[in-house]
Length: 171
Image 1 (cartoon, helix red, strand yellow):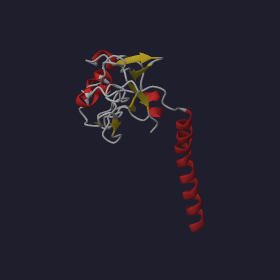
Image 2 (cartoon, helix red, strand yellow):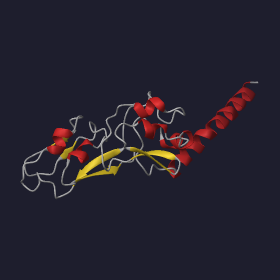
Image 3 (cartoon, helix red, strand yellow):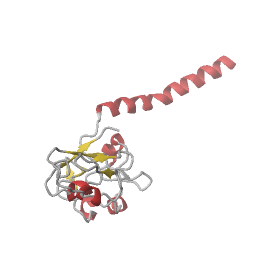
Image 4 (cartoon, one colour):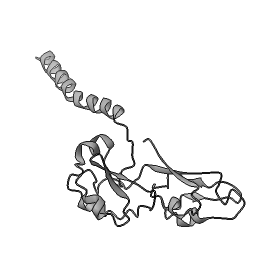
């Protein structure tokens, strides 16, 4: 009897783990290609939940959410994300969810054309960064504390010469 219980338990656990293994394999295939709005669930789940309704796009006061191929993405080319949660509040599918820590998977990098690097005493990106993630040494490129940076794009919006690029990170 004990062998039968162990066998049944083993079979049950094996069957139970199959969807987890399938999801893990799917996640490898489904890498994030675009930044998602803050509070987006994991990419595999996001792709399944986001139905492309556009409510988040309409709710965004900064107009940084747009729809591409039926799902929401973040475009910080012309503005930054204020992390106001209005997009999350209107999301009916759960693709954006209040229980998810607000995070945007973009991190800034700085070009050699940076005014501070060119000895022109500029700190526009550092001043704009509400997360306090940017540190500037005179005559050097700014550095980013990746743990503090929330990916909002304030630094990019503040840089009037376009030296800040936001790069998609892989979590």
